[in-house]
Picture 1 (cartoon, helix red, strand yellow):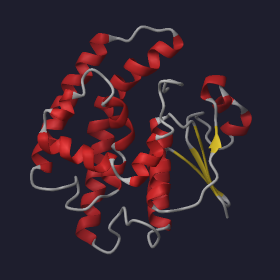
Picture 2: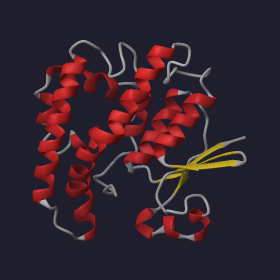
Picture 3: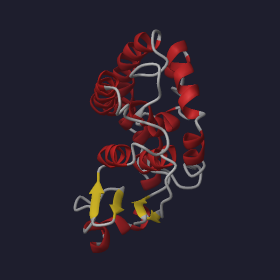
Amino acid sequence: MVLKPHGFPVSPCTARVEACLHEKTLDFDFVPVDILALENKQPSFLAKNPFGQIPAFEDGDITLFESRAITAYVAEKFKGTGYDLIRHENLKEGALVKVWIEVESQQYHPAICPIVYEFFGKPVVGCKPDQTLIDASLEKLEKVLDVYETRLSSNKYLAGDFYSLADLHHFAYTFYFMKTPWSSLIIDRPHVKAWWEDISARPASVKVAEGMNFGEVEIK
């Protein structure tokens, strides 16, 4: 069966799924969904994701949505292919991957997402970014990054000395954040900076970044 991710190339959540597929060296048929034209609100897409949010993912008779659920499915189903993103042969390491996947979802994402959306997304629809919200989110992100700096001072990657799905989940939003005026929050923390330079230089990350051109189409 052909794997079919449906999404918008500059969307961080779409990029998260694409990066996972590339890490697993899988062939797939990308189906573009133009959210600016509201294609994600059409019945054909809503049949795949009733919430009308990208991405969606088809693998034969199963259709998934929510990017982290998709990457978890891909990493587990194809654990013997490409790079092992979940450390499936080591219970302890696998558990630590799960911990840091949760940290990204519950701590990192809620802090960084509003910054990226306000800075890049709002202007597309003719709205002014909410600097008060950005400042509050920057304060939250600083606290999260302090924890990361401590963690990465003794581990090359978040779950240990191995790259994993936990690191991959950070790539897309951090990619955009590094193009904002506040990238010093990463740069000024040497271990976080080294980690970012490492994960962003991976071939899968570089490949996905080629389509993340917010200069042509701003993210949503």
